[in-house]
Structure formats: C-alpha cells, structure tokens
Amino acid sequence: MTLRLRDCGTNAPITGWISDGIQTFYTDANGQFIAVINDAYTGYIVSIGSSGYVGTNFHIDKANHAGTIQTVCLNPASSGSGPGGGGGGSGW
Image (tube, rainbow, N blue to C red; front, side, top):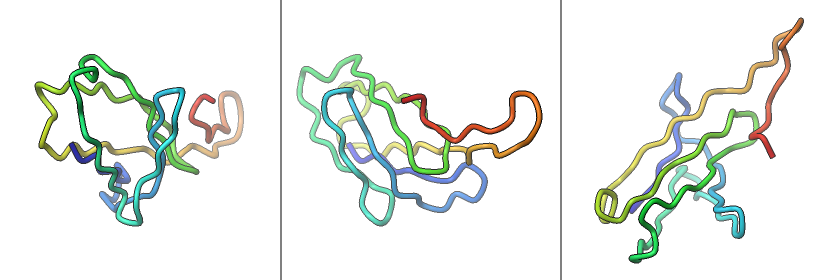
C-alpha cells in the first residue's frame, strides 16, 4: 500500500509522518510512504501528520488496501485569533 499525503485545499504533495504510537515513519519528498501490509494489519490505526497541518488518523485494512494507493489530505492548521484560535498540532 502506498499512502500519499496531500494538502486538502491545493492537492499539493506534502511531506509528513506516519506513526503507530511505537514507530514513526516519514514520507518521501513527494509525500509518499510505501508500506508492506502483513496479516497483522487488519483494523490497524495510524496517526498521520505534517508540520503546520492538522493531523488525522487512518485505518489500515489488508483486505481493502493491499496493493493500492491511498490519498490522505491534511488541512492547514488555523492561526486564527480569539477564542478557540491558534492550533497547529497533531494532538501529540
């Protein structure tokens, strides 16, 4: 499976990271990460993020994702002012 990270607004590739909470992997310069999915990766959830973007989770399922390209888009972090403004993390 290949994960591709894109900016939700521009569809431009972005570099980022993928983590299962134990290991962290990084995308290449094109925002891609290639994963070999074994049988243990059914119902496997990873966190995906990039500096300056709001992170998200992605659910990996070998039956549905093996041999596919999955695109995940991330939204830029808000830098608004006032109540609830700010942001810019992945929750970690």
